[in-house]
Image 1 (cartoon, protein in one colour):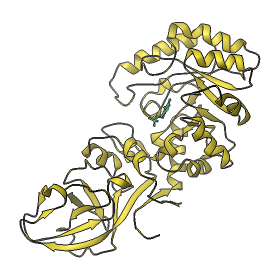
Image 2 (cartoon, protein in one colour):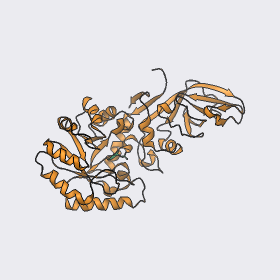
Image 3 (tube, protein in one colour):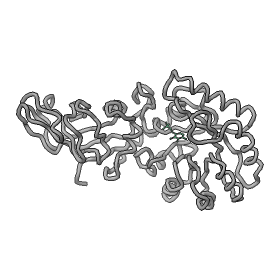
Image 4 (cartoon, rainbow, N blue to C red):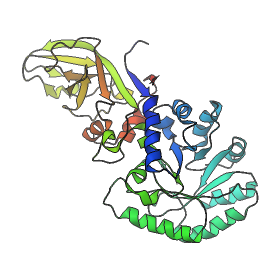
Length: 358
Ligand SMILES: *Cc1c(COP(=O)(O)O)cnc(C)c1O
């Protein structure tokens, strides 16, 4: 390897986070969400670590599921958006995948196919993204349940829109819609994402669907991993590739947006927005140089960013720089950059090698 930019993936942290989920939801089965290449951590890598620890995996699409099957993963896999065209159905059956059904044409095609597939019926309890209206759900569920070829049970699932806001009454309203349905339809159910698992015990049902918390990130805007008993899985790191002394008034980087207030050392780090570091991280965003916080200065460029080394006068070329990880919460970086940790993780680009450590 040449360039020092890499994402360290700590498998022991993944295991510890599953343990935390089991503590919070001891009676529930766990569907580990691995969409978007395991939130940027590498879906196959994460699946290999978690295969014996969880009950199922969930991904966005058939393509994502096939990557896991081709890597030898035999755990049940749920397609969260279901199938996008009928040609996918024979493959779903042959690969023993499970599919969400959320729209009428999917219902008609899955029934007509006569394939032995497990389906999860998605209800829209208020998010208004995917799913059937509560009032049409019972009739559709009965049709699926009466179909001899489909595998049973046919669970109900729904998704929470505001669970990351602890005071938001929307979750209570969604829950009452879902529970009302479950009084009339006797089957398994799944509702909770990470925020539901952590903050809304009443949403746990039979199957929980943790995504972001698996990766050791808080789903809430006001807490970090540690506060939630989670361990950060990814550390994005690089190194100083240049350290130079500049004079008072010298400008740093594109647009000359930052000027040295005095004669000072400035470091250049080999990481930029093409690696997934957010271009909108403002001057002052913390970066760790040899484990100590220093501020980013100037604009983030495609392959590099600059840091103020006044507090680290001995820093030199080759020193390790951490952009986020155990000792620098990704939640903090995301807030400063005006985004959420989910997006930062998914944006870590293919050119960044993932290095697995225990
Ligand atoms: C992504 C996703 C999840 C996981 O959400 P987190 O907030 O990452 O825990 C759960 N359910 C569905 C339907 C999803 O799309």
